[in-house]
Length: 304
Image (tube, rainbow, N blue to C red):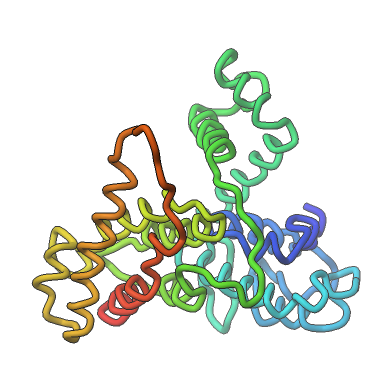
């Protein structure tokens, strides 16, 4: 595999910083794998990868084996932070395996992820319509090929491409519903009892929806988040969290009671009200429960 600069895979810092880990991870791993066999590199040696050496290359004036200028210019520090998060995610998900003394290797699971991303790159070149037509009419034989799991993966890729909401690039200092720092804390959580990926994705999509002024979606996602988290507090419903949870302060309980009544009622109205002769559309103010959500997520982080 020839060396592939990260910016050849993700051209702009805005695009990279807007990605969730499930999108960024395979691309970043492809970039890491491309260091293998590059003469003189300190990143990939003897089948092992070193994050510190990678960051040294990013942070020097000569970046990468061909000694080009910084790939992302003055946005490089922001990219470096995202890269470290992606490395941590790859390790947490088992795509990278620790080898001691800050060295890591790509696991068998990681190699499968690389193969899947390589297939998706080919599908991207063909286009969604071509891949979808091949799956529908030819069973994926002509373009997708391979065992049945390839066709299942291609179908999942088509669905993602067709249904993925538009993402507006983040702007420095821009207000979002869930703080980036809070998302970073959630991504760092580990538990033998709970998988936090859906919670994190709900928070990411809340930010997408609020940034794009999708107020119906913001209200519904807020309700979905409230329905998702009760087991973390040892109960079955969010009403039980609001009324019975004893681990938080009085202000936490009062805020959760407000979140349980107001947020759920507003979401129910947005979701279940049928078509009428006249309508008023929701505003950002109507679905903005950011302070209460931040308090809830902070308590989840504290008790995990």
